[in-house]
Length: 200
Image (cartoon, rainbow, N blue to C red; front, side, top):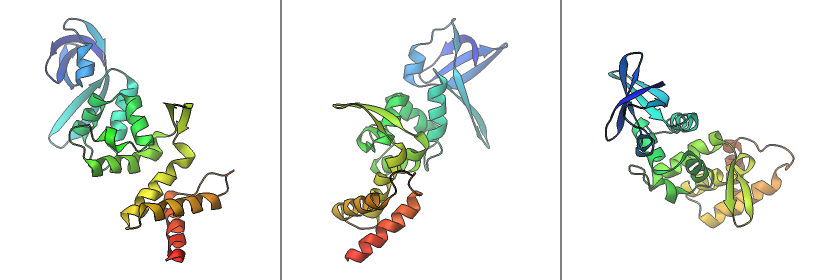
Protein backbone atom coordinates (compact mmCIF):
# COMPACT_ATOMS: atom_id res chain seq x y z
CA UNK A 1 0.00 0.00 0.00
CA UNK A 2 1.45 3.35 -1.06
CA UNK A 3 0.15 6.81 -0.16
CA UNK A 4 0.40 9.86 2.06
CA UNK A 5 0.35 9.58 5.85
CA UNK A 6 -2.50 11.75 7.14
CA UNK A 7 -2.64 10.71 10.82
CA UNK A 8 -0.69 8.63 13.31
CA UNK A 9 -2.20 7.20 16.51
CA UNK A 10 -0.83 5.07 19.36
CA UNK A 11 -1.14 1.86 17.33
CA UNK A 12 -2.54 2.95 13.94
CA UNK A 13 -1.66 5.03 10.92
CA UNK A 14 -4.04 6.48 8.35
CA UNK A 15 -2.72 6.39 4.78
CA UNK A 16 -4.59 8.19 2.01
CA UNK A 17 -4.79 6.01 -1.10
CA UNK A 18 -6.70 7.33 -4.10
CA UNK A 19 -8.50 9.91 -1.99
CA UNK A 20 -9.58 7.38 0.66
CA UNK A 21 -8.02 7.25 4.15
CA UNK A 22 -7.25 3.69 5.23
CA UNK A 23 -6.37 2.88 8.85
CA UNK A 24 -3.71 0.24 9.44
CA UNK A 25 -2.71 -1.29 12.78
CA UNK A 26 1.09 -1.11 13.12
CA UNK A 27 3.74 -1.97 15.69
CA UNK A 28 5.51 0.90 17.53
CA UNK A 29 8.67 0.25 15.51
CA UNK A 30 6.82 0.70 12.22
CA UNK A 31 5.00 3.82 13.43
CA UNK A 32 8.26 5.40 14.59
CA UNK A 33 9.51 5.64 11.00
CA UNK A 34 6.36 7.39 9.68
CA UNK A 35 5.72 11.12 9.43
CA UNK A 36 2.42 12.95 8.83
CA UNK A 37 2.41 14.44 5.34
CA UNK A 38 5.12 12.11 4.03
CA UNK A 39 4.67 9.43 1.40
CA UNK A 40 5.02 5.86 2.64
CA UNK A 41 4.86 2.29 1.43
CA UNK A 42 3.60 -0.37 3.83
CA UNK A 43 3.19 -4.09 3.29
CA UNK A 44 -0.47 -4.64 4.24
CA UNK A 45 -2.30 -7.74 5.44
CA UNK A 46 -6.11 -7.81 5.50
CA UNK A 47 -7.73 -9.85 8.27
CA UNK A 48 -11.34 -10.72 7.46
CA UNK A 49 -13.84 -11.45 10.23
CA UNK A 50 -17.63 -11.78 10.09
CA UNK A 51 -18.09 -8.31 11.54
CA UNK A 52 -14.92 -6.52 10.47
CA UNK A 53 -12.20 -5.97 7.89
CA UNK A 54 -8.93 -4.98 9.58
CA UNK A 55 -5.71 -3.88 7.91
CA UNK A 56 -2.31 -4.48 9.50
CA UNK A 57 0.71 -2.60 8.18
CA UNK A 58 4.39 -3.59 8.14
CA UNK A 59 7.64 -1.94 7.15
CA UNK A 60 8.48 -4.74 4.71
CA UNK A 61 7.14 -7.89 3.07
CA UNK A 62 9.23 -10.15 5.34
CA UNK A 63 7.45 -8.94 8.48
CA UNK A 64 4.07 -9.27 6.76
CA UNK A 65 4.80 -12.85 5.66
CA UNK A 66 5.86 -13.85 9.17
CA UNK A 67 2.77 -12.13 10.64
CA UNK A 68 0.58 -14.31 8.42
CA UNK A 69 2.59 -17.46 9.20
CA UNK A 70 2.34 -16.89 12.96
CA UNK A 71 -1.45 -16.90 12.69
CA UNK A 72 -1.41 -20.48 11.38
CA UNK A 73 -0.43 -21.62 14.91
CA UNK A 74 -3.22 -22.60 17.30
CA UNK A 75 -4.43 -19.76 19.48
CA UNK A 76 -2.51 -17.05 17.65
CA UNK A 77 -4.65 -14.27 16.22
CA UNK A 78 -3.57 -11.06 14.52
CA UNK A 79 -3.17 -9.12 17.78
CA UNK A 80 -0.82 -11.72 19.29
CA UNK A 81 1.08 -12.08 16.01
CA UNK A 82 1.58 -8.32 15.89
CA UNK A 83 2.67 -8.29 19.55
CA UNK A 84 5.35 -10.87 18.73
CA UNK A 85 6.69 -8.65 15.95
CA UNK A 86 6.53 -5.60 18.22
CA UNK A 87 8.87 -7.31 20.71
CA UNK A 88 11.16 -9.20 18.30
CA UNK A 89 12.45 -8.64 14.77
CA UNK A 90 11.37 -11.24 12.17
CA UNK A 91 14.85 -12.81 12.26
CA UNK A 92 14.77 -13.02 16.07
CA UNK A 93 11.35 -14.70 15.95
CA UNK A 94 12.60 -17.29 13.46
CA UNK A 95 15.70 -18.01 15.55
CA UNK A 96 13.61 -18.34 18.73
CA UNK A 97 11.28 -20.84 17.03
CA UNK A 98 14.11 -22.77 15.33
CA UNK A 99 16.11 -23.09 18.56
CA UNK A 100 13.06 -23.69 20.79
CA UNK A 101 13.92 -20.55 22.79
CA UNK A 102 10.64 -20.40 24.70
CA UNK A 103 12.11 -17.85 27.14
CA UNK A 104 12.40 -15.32 24.30
CA UNK A 105 8.87 -16.05 23.11
CA UNK A 106 7.34 -15.68 26.57
CA UNK A 107 8.70 -12.11 26.74
CA UNK A 108 5.80 -11.26 24.45
CA UNK A 109 2.71 -10.11 26.41
CA UNK A 110 -0.03 -12.73 26.09
CA UNK A 111 2.27 -15.70 25.43
CA UNK A 112 2.87 -18.13 28.27
CA UNK A 113 5.11 -21.19 28.42
CA UNK A 114 2.57 -23.51 26.81
CA UNK A 115 1.82 -20.99 24.08
CA UNK A 116 5.53 -20.64 23.33
CA UNK A 117 5.97 -24.41 23.19
CA UNK A 118 3.00 -24.65 20.82
CA UNK A 119 4.54 -22.02 18.53
CA UNK A 120 7.77 -24.00 18.36
CA UNK A 121 6.02 -27.31 17.76
CA UNK A 122 3.65 -26.04 15.08
CA UNK A 123 5.88 -23.59 13.20
CA UNK A 124 9.38 -25.02 13.38
CA UNK A 125 8.98 -27.06 10.21
CA UNK A 126 7.34 -24.16 8.39
CA UNK A 127 10.05 -21.55 8.92
CA UNK A 128 12.77 -23.78 7.44
CA UNK A 129 16.48 -23.52 8.20
CA UNK A 130 17.70 -20.44 10.09
CA UNK A 131 21.28 -19.16 10.39
CA UNK A 132 22.31 -18.58 14.02
CA UNK A 133 25.47 -16.75 15.10
CA UNK A 134 27.20 -18.48 18.03
CA UNK A 135 30.69 -19.01 19.45
CA UNK A 136 31.55 -21.37 16.63
CA UNK A 137 30.52 -18.92 13.91
CA UNK A 138 27.35 -19.24 11.86
CA UNK A 139 25.36 -22.42 12.44
CA UNK A 140 22.31 -23.49 10.48
CA UNK A 141 19.44 -24.55 12.73
CA UNK A 142 16.29 -26.22 11.52
CA UNK A 143 15.62 -28.31 8.48
CA UNK A 144 16.64 -31.97 8.81
CA UNK A 145 17.18 -32.04 12.59
CA UNK A 146 14.10 -30.11 13.70
CA UNK A 147 12.35 -33.41 14.46
CA UNK A 148 14.63 -34.20 17.41
CA UNK A 149 13.29 -31.44 19.67
CA UNK A 150 9.71 -32.12 18.55
CA UNK A 151 9.95 -35.83 19.41
CA UNK A 152 11.71 -35.01 22.70
CA UNK A 153 8.94 -32.59 23.73
CA UNK A 154 6.22 -35.05 22.72
CA UNK A 155 7.79 -37.85 24.80
CA UNK A 156 8.13 -35.70 27.91
CA UNK A 157 4.55 -34.55 27.36
CA UNK A 158 3.49 -38.21 27.37
CA UNK A 159 5.12 -38.76 30.75
CA UNK A 160 8.63 -40.01 30.05
CA UNK A 161 11.55 -38.35 31.81
CA UNK A 162 13.84 -35.98 29.93
CA UNK A 163 16.65 -38.57 30.23
CA UNK A 164 14.47 -41.31 28.69
CA UNK A 165 13.36 -38.94 25.93
CA UNK A 166 16.96 -37.98 25.12
CA UNK A 167 18.00 -41.65 25.00
CA UNK A 168 15.13 -42.54 22.67
CA UNK A 169 15.82 -39.59 20.36
CA UNK A 170 19.51 -40.56 20.19
CA UNK A 171 18.62 -44.17 19.41
CA UNK A 172 16.18 -43.14 16.66
CA UNK A 173 18.78 -40.76 15.21
CA UNK A 174 21.37 -43.53 15.08
CA UNK A 175 18.93 -45.81 13.25
CA UNK A 176 18.21 -43.30 10.46
CA UNK A 177 19.73 -43.29 7.01
CA UNK A 178 21.86 -40.12 7.28
CA UNK A 179 21.90 -39.66 3.52
CA UNK A 180 18.12 -39.37 3.28
CA UNK A 181 15.57 -36.98 4.76
CA UNK A 182 14.07 -38.22 8.04
CA UNK A 183 10.52 -39.64 8.02
CA UNK A 184 7.62 -37.47 9.27
CA UNK A 185 7.68 -36.59 12.97
CA UNK A 186 4.68 -38.85 13.87
CA UNK A 187 6.55 -41.88 12.44
CA UNK A 188 9.71 -40.95 14.37
CA UNK A 189 7.68 -40.51 17.55
CA UNK A 190 6.15 -43.99 17.15
CA UNK A 191 9.63 -45.43 16.67
CA UNK A 192 10.86 -43.69 19.83
CA UNK A 193 7.87 -44.97 21.83
CA UNK A 194 8.58 -48.53 20.62
CA UNK A 195 12.20 -48.20 21.76
CA UNK A 196 11.14 -46.90 25.16
CA UNK A 197 8.64 -49.74 25.47
CA UNK A 198 11.44 -52.28 25.11
CA UNK A 199 13.40 -50.73 27.98
CA UNK A 200 10.54 -50.76 30.48
